[in-house]
Length: 135
Image (cartoon, rainbow, N blue to C red; front, side, top):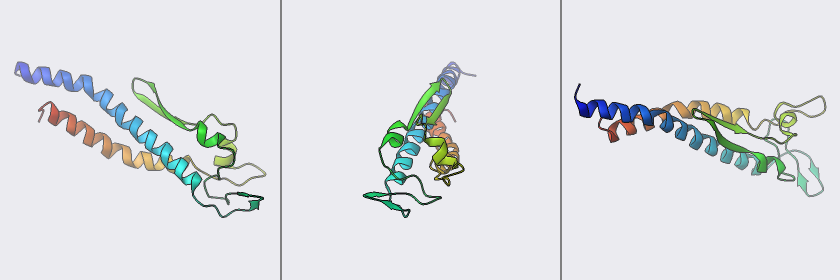
């Protein structure tokens, strides 16, 4: 193996994990944006004064903005990204409870992210390999 190839393989290995995490973080931020957009979409639930509530199965309607404001995607370790909310209403809205039917907003985004990330990661890895001229 030539010195250049060894050097490029080393650069590739050093950059690989960072590249995958960058792709995951970008995907997480896009998921958060999609969740927020879904919450802003028109709803078909009951009207309470000026507030149009969401119907069961729809993403939650925005009332105070606390839930949308609490959504974020962050890198939590060298190789892990989390999409989360710390709003106490989130679990009740996502899964429902004895009083309120579910208004899922994270589950669909997680599924979409799960479908989109592998191809995005492969593309980023291929771009990295091409940049380092590894064939």
